[in-house]
Length: 78
Image (cartoon, rainbow, N blue to C red; front, top):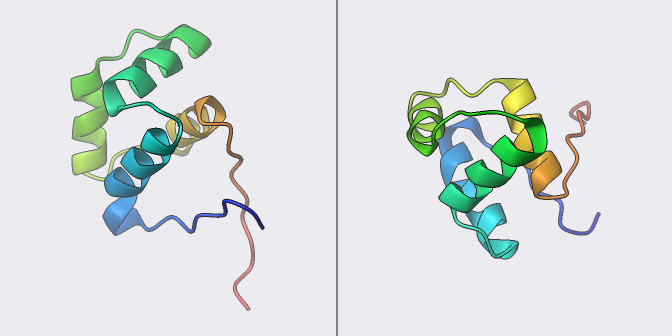
């Protein structure tokens, strides 16, 4: 599949930064876009803290994926 990324919880922050950079965004602009699209008021610092402590919720990851024009797919391991 084109542009398929396997997420790793240990490197999620780096992977999201990489995907954002592919779309011409840094993490600040990404968070602003999430806030605007989903009518939120979370801070960029809040996002960094959640990523640092592995506390990002699936719904928040889905919002980030939506902004980056990705979808989340669960696939059974072979």
